Length: 73
Image 1 (cartoon, rainbow, N blue to C red):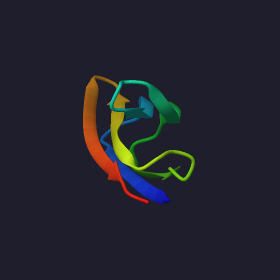
Image 2: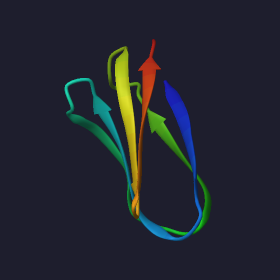
Image 3: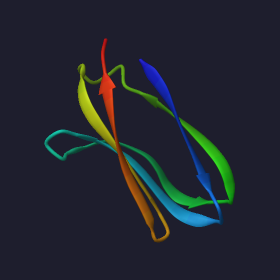
Image 4: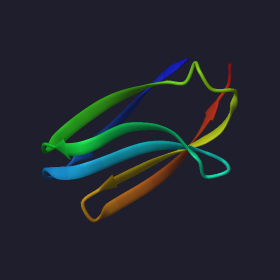
């Protein structure tokens, strides 16, 4: 089970993109590096986790966002 996560940076920034379970534990760190301005795509392979609700957290510079995803196998 793979999903593509797409995000756009208006300027270069240090990016941390992580996946969390409902208990707040980090399941995967998808990016933890400086990224250039523009559109970026990262593929998360969730085949090693169970069907459940997960949260994707993006922190880039002073911006932060959390999105809920549901993984169904």
